[in-house]
Amino acid sequence: MSLHVNDLKVHYRTLRGDVHAIDGVTFSLEDGEIMGLVGESGCGKSTLGKSLIRLDSQMRHVGGTVELDGRGVPIADDDAMVPLRYHEVSLIPQYAMSALNPIRRIGRMIDELLRARGVRPADKADELRRRLELVGLEPDVLRRFPIELSGGMKQRVVMVLSTLLDPSLLIADEVTSALDVSTQRSVAESLVEFRDRGYVRSMVFVTHDVSLVYQIADTIMVMYAGHVAEKGPADSIVSEPRHPYTQMLLSALPEVGSTSGERLQGIPGTPPGLLDPPTGCRFRARCPMAFDKCAERPPLVETAPGHWSACWKTGGE
Amino acid sequence: MLELSHVHKVYRVGAFGGGRKRAVRDVGLTVRPGEVVSLIGESGSGKSTLGKMVLGLTRPTSGRITFEGTDISTIRGFRAEKEYHRRVQGVFQDPFSCFNPIFKAERVLTMIRTSYFPEVSDADWRDRVVSSLRTVRLDPDNVLDKYPHQLSGGQLQRLLIARALLLDIRMLVADEVISMLDASTRIDVLNLLADLKERGLGILFVTHDLSLGTYVSDTTVILHKGAVAEMGPTRKVFDDPRHPYSRRLLSCVPQLHRSWAEVDAELAAREPEPVRLPTLVEGEDSAPMVEVGEGHFVGADQG
Image (cartoon, rainbow over all chains, first blue to last red; front, side):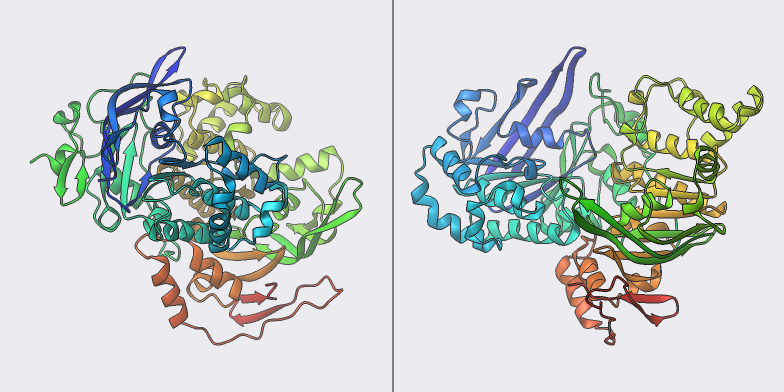
């Protein structure tokens, strides 16, 4: 068991009160597992990814524990997290394309970053070149400035950079969202390659695109309004989703080539505000199957091996 | 209704405008009433430039764009442009930045009245507003007295379409209208476009997302480096892509229920009869097309 998150609660402090962005999230990740984390904007997926590596000043750890390779991860303690960052847990941030320092040559920037983490750049130089080659970049890019690279190239530089110290857990936050489809495919496939070669042990791939995550992930976790709706093997989430939210979300996605003329249906309503979230199941107000019991929060239960769902109708018995 | 023939656009680039950047190369297409034409392309393919030229926001370097028989480059002056925009409107990608944050929704719609319909009576105007909001499936009581930040992205996008509908338009340019929306509300906006199409509007639907492009459209135009790579009835283009670029593009789209490896195998198994692609002549601007099926054209391979 590589990563174990138990009942994690992270809130955002605002002037009007706490926003319950993550409200009791429990899941675990096996060694070598790529988990796709999907959900709509504001469901807490990026917050979850971020809170595993660094809480910013507005985020507050309210409860729950995170364990990586059998050791506790002190996510609330910023100083205690420092030795873990980059070595054990690493991140490819959202908009990684603009994450590079524009006034440093890429090679120098990587050297500085390694030194800051107590690693001698010379020890990693050969490995760096090998990995750049693996993702299809010339070692020449190290002498260039970020502005000289295309979006896809920058994304690949950041990928190599983030995984250079072989972290146990990699959080990839919307890494392919800003890329064109053909570049998107090659970047996504390189991530799988990194896992296969053991550069990263396990990965959380945060995205809003279910069909992309289906291409690369072993398991998919669906979040809704700060709660986990469903987690299971990618195949069974896509072909037989249990939770009504997942079902409706998937049926609202148009597919390439389906021009049969039949109309798809969206999900009426909007997600609840998380400043003062409703009690019970958070999908209740938009769910066609809701009944009295939904006023109580449904537990996340295992309905099939490895397939967890939080709904009274599907996992109640 | 809308006709583009041999449209080119060359931008001046560089500090003093000394450089030249060809954004659109020899594009010809038509949009008929009640037809949705999808313009699909990756970033830098010229799809948004085409949309802007149709809206009259930028002029083509050469070529003709005609709308209902009038060459739109002859439309000059404030009055004439206003008259044109009564019939042709655009809706853009980011609904959040299209609204004045200190104006309530009602005021946004009232501005249409003051500039286009000063003679309409209050009651009559109120009816028009309510009916156009109902068309886009928004509840007037719920929306009209709200500020933009109180509405969701999907609601704002529909409000923009409602605003365009007040003008009794005949042509809508929808530039990436759903890219910013969540999956669950995205489909509502797409369905709305399909409703408008049934009312006889011509829609130019600009997108980078192939799966959204197929959902509503009748005709698909795939752009590559400013020129048309493949163009034809949506069904034909997606079931039987003939241009190497469109085949590559289709093989990269992530699909639900089918993995990339499966799609690759399928495309390889259905190798189409080879097409002799036209070639671009060095030093010439034209981009020739070859007809491979009824109404199905392919353009030159630009690598």
